[in-house]
Amino acid sequence: MSKFAPHRKSLNNPRSSSATVCQKCLKTGHFIYECKSPRPYVTRPSRTEMLEDPKLLAKLKADGKPSVEVPEEFKKQSGTANRILEGKEKEREKTIAAAQDSKSRKKARR
Image 1 (cartoon, rainbow, N blue to C red):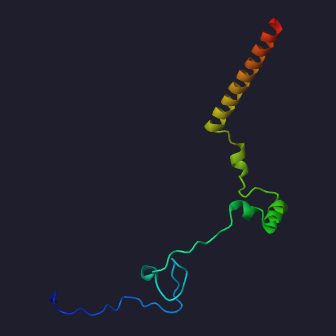
Image 2: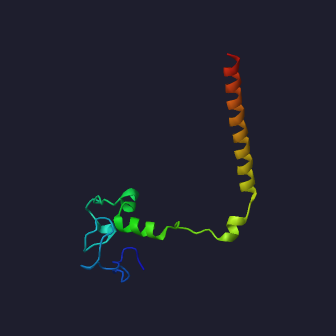
């Protein structure tokens, strides 16, 4: 095929119909690569607004359960992370107790 010969239109190119919806401007009749209009601003509800919806709130309160249930076999296990957290909690309690003791000793000296 010569580069100077006329090329035929490809049969693979899809044609847009009146039912085709552009994903950029949300209008019908063209594809996104043919779109010349700007993208419209579409407002969506925030997470707080969604959770304040009375229907959803009633459903969550009626269930009374968390959205994800942890199986009993995982609740009973004490892994390395749990041991580390327990150790740090004990250290924190000791430092708080020591700080309170030192404050009480300073007040007793005065």
